[in-house]
Length: 230
Image (cartoon, rainbow, N blue to C red):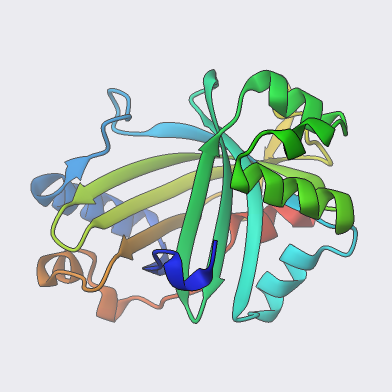
């Protein structure tokens, strides 16, 4: 798919502390709606398996702040293997795009075992792209990342606000479906990540709630942080 046909969104990231967190949660619950998939606590667990090549291209481009970059990952929620997504996240000129397609557990297991020839017969553009890059660029599974997410929705501006915490990684592990894989906290154990995504504009009420002008936007990457451990 051509970049000019993709829908790119604004994405802002902020590192906040525990006091900020409780203040934001109170404000957000008063104005926004929770994501339809949250549990009774208003959150869900995410496990992602990120891909990179033998030269750590995705990691290096993130660290170097390369303007036009991408990364692939496989993701599921709340330890539920019945709904798994293959995703490609792209960044261009500070804007973000995410493409996703469903993938089955059996397909994932083939892929993780290095059996990828089936992918070129799927007629799925995203799977075909991943197949090409695994075949020709040596892209392969690299790192597991677990964390808890609290998502909030505000329809004007198509705003999605997420708060991520309890970030963990496996030690040189990429066993996506092994729930007993030892996972350790990163050195950002007390770090909480606020993300704000929107289309063409961000409503003033959201700006006021998260007080964007008083926080420093950063380029925090869960993948990059977790790669320090394997």
